[in-house]
Image 1 (tube, rainbow, N blue to C red):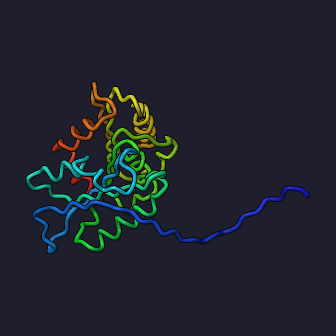
Image 2 (image 1 turned 180 degrees about the horizontal axis):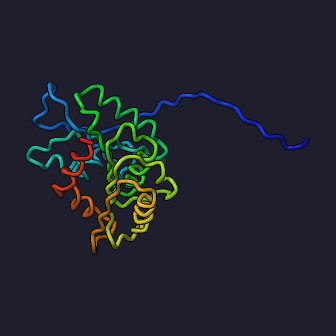
Image 3 (image 1 turned 120 degrees about the horizontal axis):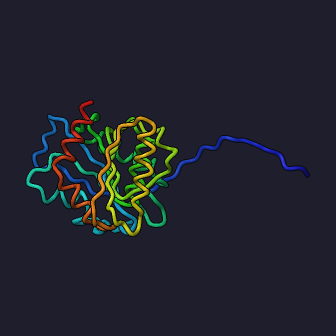
Length: 217
């Protein structure tokens, strides 16, 4: 019999359990609205053991700060998948946290490291309506997707990254510039693919000034 072409629409639902850490500012007052940062971890932190996220990334910085003024939502990606693979579930989780706390919807941001940097780029492409800005660290994505990014991006990468080449960020930044998009780029000389890249940017006051400015657009 000859081969014929077909198209159909399918509807299905998937239930997935996702653990997460939520940092709530010490000074939180529910009568005021607060900004929220979604933090996406790297590939080695996947699974169902939330202790892997202890003292890690933006959670570590928020806990160490005397008065960190942002909520930080840090979900844990299940094993054998990626942030791109569970994008819809992550967005649903963010919406749930926004609904259960007094979050300023104009100041919701996304950042992530390595696989999380890839996830931050992906969210910037697919869910710009929910986020005010994205900060992908040591990430990568398809350059042709830059045309669909309609939120500001500050890309970060270590110059000597030996796992995810710095070209992963460079190509995306160049593609965004070619499209006339709002993009900023920082390359840290001498840094490889390690947590020092996160330590450096998350300790930088200019990052939070930039986020606040983009949330006030």
